[in-house]
Image (cartoon, rainbow, N blue to C red; front, top):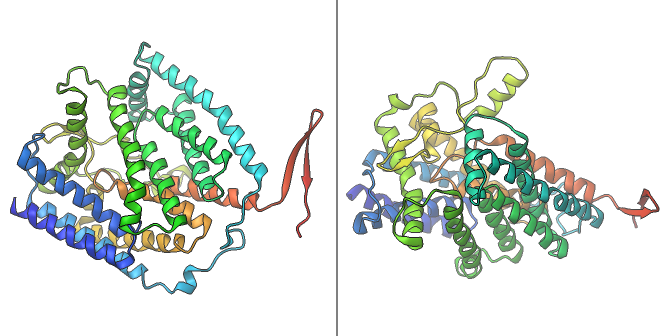
Length: 431
């Protein structure tokens, strides 16, 4: 217990230092330490009140996590030394001034998403029917999605639900960097519904956290007091749907304690179990030796696709471990520790801290593209106590490519109009 207390004190001190570094709740090292402080505080409270039974975490595991956080923070401090002249540099298609994107492009994207949403509804129903149908549509669809993900079965339903929700989030975040008009709210509602239809909570977390980050950056309300006045509503919204989805996509009929008891147990177990699972990895590394790389999945997958070498991707779902309740998430540290060792983990965390903080400092200068990218990239920070999301390079490349296309096409002055049965493209001259 003494090691847990020392680790908690260390993280609280590091939390204060990171906040003082930029005076912002959006500073990546600050968010990193907030998540780990939350995890350790919940474990400490659980020891006192015994909410759920949990395997104790060893001191060496806590030391690895703490030194890793320090390495991430050092990367952020180094990024803070970047000359402001470099951060203020903008490409032509990403001007520093808030230039509104062509309205026709916004209309086209809104119409496409409006047409895609009923298709997502239909695919969710199809997934539910494959599990027997009935009233628990989201629960059955969730079970089928998990089975297909584990088996790497890219059925039409999985592809449609995944891509529509992903690009709806991209579009909502891009619209948020522009004016918040009716199109923005329509697209955001579509994205919200699509995220719910994924039957999981990850997509909702990406959308809500991303929109919140853009609002705070644009309104320059990054101080702790100003941010908390606003963030209480997005946090409450996510908590509401987090609890609601527990009872729609999880079999809770055998659980006791009522709505509050079940929600508390599931929520606390989700927060404390990954660190306990990672502790088991640290104490028994030979039992978790990997046969294929998780960290370098993207370049190795690319090499395999080009037939330059054979590559077997890692399993889509990790091994379940009992701590003593079942979990298959091991914090972001697991694969870096297994594949690279302690020193390699620190090096990667330092690089992540540097690059992520550099992106944040760039977004803080007001550029719409960097604001959009940073808003989407907050998600891996919020997941550090659960699983690694930094390795998903292909997703970040999609986000960047979609953003580049949006701002490039949106900077071209054109207007779409309908004349009879023909679409005309009317070019407008620039002043």
